[in-house]
Amino acid sequence: MSDGGLDELFSFRDESVEEVAEPVVKRKSRLWWVVRNALLIAGATVVTIAALRAGGLHISVLLVVAFFIGLRAVLWAVSEVAPPPLPKRRRAARADDGRAFDSLRAAVRRWEKSLDRANTDPDLYTRNVLPVLTELADERLRLRHGITRASDPRRARELLGDPLWAAMHDHGRRSAKTRELETYVEALERL
Image (cartoon, rainbow, N blue to C red; front, side, top):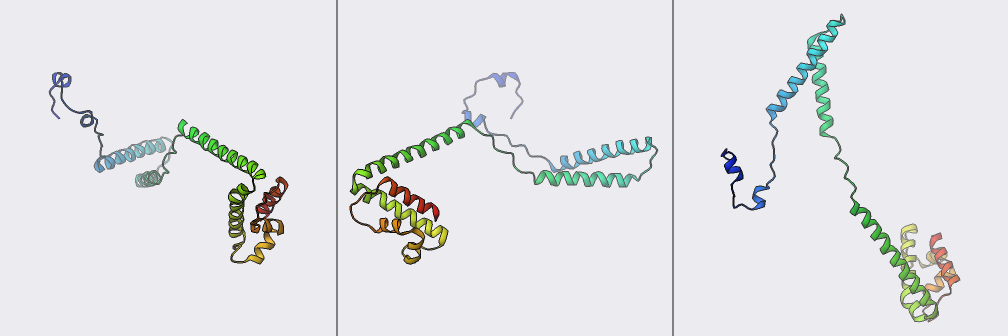
């Protein structure tokens, strides 16, 4: 950079914005850090010794200097392990939460419609509802009891109960009634 004065400052340059807007990284000098801390310690020592002497107390200057050096070292160590600042909550994050809630609501509505249609269409019940029901049962058995229907069918049947077990193995074209579905869900929740 040259010091050309105001003429150079206001003159037209054919540079791109990216070249002008480069971030300036300032390096802190280690020497400046040491000098600044030495001045802080010296100033604090002078004030402390003057206050103690004015109060009629005589204490070693080396003891006061050692105290302030130790205090400064502790403050430096604490600043090095300080947690990062908390991120600021943005308004966009709240909008995402609302969208996630809306998508959950849409999924629940799809399931409600699917279950309503499955009451009248046995084929739809067999294709859509029954596979999900068996998958949920297998997952609950695996997570809560460490078994699956395939690994320990006798124990799985005991845990699921006869109505749910029969429904999962009934490959007939019969749709479940609302009360039966409630019984199956209660059996899954008991797992």
